[in-house]
Image (cartoon, rainbow, N blue to C red):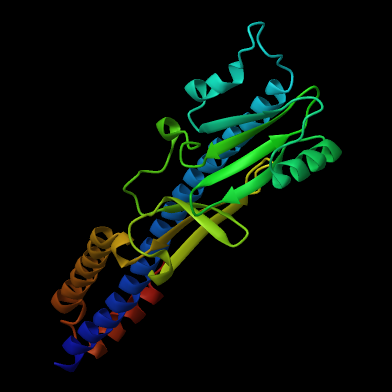
Length: 262
């Protein structure tokens, strides 16, 4: 009985150790795959938002080159038909002053830097104002940050677990709330990167919490069962044949095999 129970005990220990290694390996591989996919989607989202930010800079630069229509019309006021994120366009003509001190200060700053600058950033309302100095006219845009997102190309599902936000100065504007709180998950993960436009100093933050439900439980259970089946087969072989002979006979057989030529 002792010879028969020892393989069972050893087999149980081997099954536990091998199953643990397999389960940990499969879990780690799945988390790595999920994180790589998360990182890819976050980088695409950042690139798309950076393209929109650069588009705002280009619109302001183009407006500064436009002249008022011959009939006195202002074609820039039709921008929202092409760019829905542009809520309003303001203009300061030559020799005029902005009616707002913040706009006037931003005009001076923009002239010194030679580029567009942010005037107001209100992440509570999801709005920001950009201004670029120009001659004969300077222009400012009021931007809707949510409409800034190119949803038709957006890589992150609206009902997915990722939380996407734009952050600046300690404030955050949430573009997508995500499902569940990432900070409460066992394995939280975050992507952070500034937009590629100095006029819009927003940090794109994508967060997701990886939890127990994300682990490949089916594959882990299958691997554990496969290891158990293999060890059971080895144990069955041992009990049928390997343990049927006495220890002395087994030693004699092994010695005879060792002395045999070839």
